[in-house]
Amino acid sequence: MLFEDMRQAAIDDFISTLPKERQQRMRRLQWRIDQERRNRSPLSACVKISSMMWEHMVGPQGLLGYLQGDIKHKQQEDQQQADVLEFPLRPSRQ
Image (cartoon, rainbow, N blue to C red; front, side, top):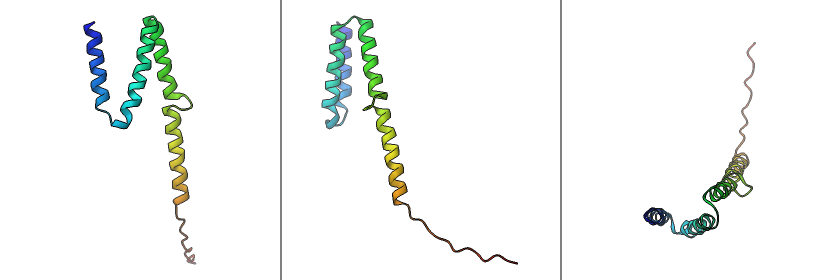
């Protein structure tokens, strides 16, 4: 029981350090994780939580998709904002 109290305190301390706009989302995520831990065997909960993590990393709405989309978006912006300069050709010396 002492471990669980310390674990919860550490989680609460960490979440409280986040910007206000992220705290509510993180509290909801922690609630989902806690529900998985309560309603499953330890191994089953570990597998489910790991699956949730991977979905958030590489799923269509995950971090990887966000980063790839952000990179593509930035590349498109860079291409659209570039000025093309024309330089006159030097006459060849003969």
